[in-house]
Length: 546
Image 1 (cartoon, rainbow, N blue to C red):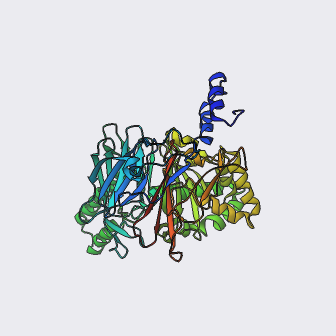
Image 2: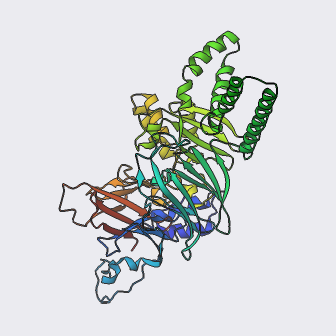
């Protein structure tokens, strides 16, 4: 910790004092208390685009055209300008900025524009994943959603359908499309990356309609390679084993049928043989899926091992397993995320909760799945206190599932005393601990790359109103009052403030306005975008250090 708050003294102290082991980055982040975006350009002349986010390394700004057909990529460039001021002037006010500074292209340089969507497809503006090692970007396009789609033998009833969903892997340095992967008559939740998770070079895509987790690998060459599909089958050779078993059964039945015909059997026995053959499991819906069978067997064994007496075991199984058996069978996969390269955190629930945006009132369960052994290793209800304790103490294992260095400093309960104190305050204030646990576990599994690594969201450096702004990638209701960032070390010191919308406030106070904030991961630079629900031209403000 620096002994002085002056930036010159901190630079000198950094030269003569060595930080403790593994604390050099945290020591360097203290400089952001002095380097803050203290100036704002209101209503900047900017292109009419949908600005998505900065990449995690800060090299690119991702945006889409208003017709959701084109991708436009910008490179952040720091503002450079010169002013003319009389040397005899003794005023302490900063010189006024040139007029050209209040333009968007003074801060950002357009690299290219690429058309990603076809005539009947649109770019999903809420979906974007970044592979930082190779600077690859993953985008998605889709056709219109069909709610009353025709039933399919393998599809989950009640889940809508999309005729075509295309995932596009693009090299952000030059805008070259490297590979594509299309899903037809399927449904993947693309809003805020909810249905897709990226961990290093592994990509998990959840098909809600067909209940499959498609695992793909992103090669260094830029190709998407199928690794495995988890759902109806769990191992690579499950389908081959079942097909070979069914063929052996068919051959045995044909042989017995021939023997019955040679022995002058009656015709009705031959018909019975054919009926028996048609009742064999057909891979469509006769069997439960492989992952569902593993889930049921894990629940059965857990209940079985709770009691040592056989009579008590049977009673416990009747009460806890067989009574709820159909409820367990009807569960579908809602969401999935990587915990590491071998384990997945899977959220199960009802069909209604998986389709609707608000799943607060629907029962949910969490399972940890080992992809190597294809076993369920843990199973929790959404009100389980032991899962909440793990979430409170080791939340970094849920939120930071990547090797990106910038994402390692996102504030969480396990790496920030201030965030932990705020969580304990909410827990003590809650009327029901069970409802509090459900509310906290509602965010699991976390959406991939859904938080900003900006140091201005570091709660060990700054204090701010999380109802108005936070590191989460979400739209928020706009406020006419500026958002204050107060120093954590000096609670009475206002470091900087950010005000979305026009400088003098909005003239129409009746319209409901929403705003979004795009913070650069390591520069004192941010963009605030305010718009109404009816999507007129947005008000773009640029906040920077002057």
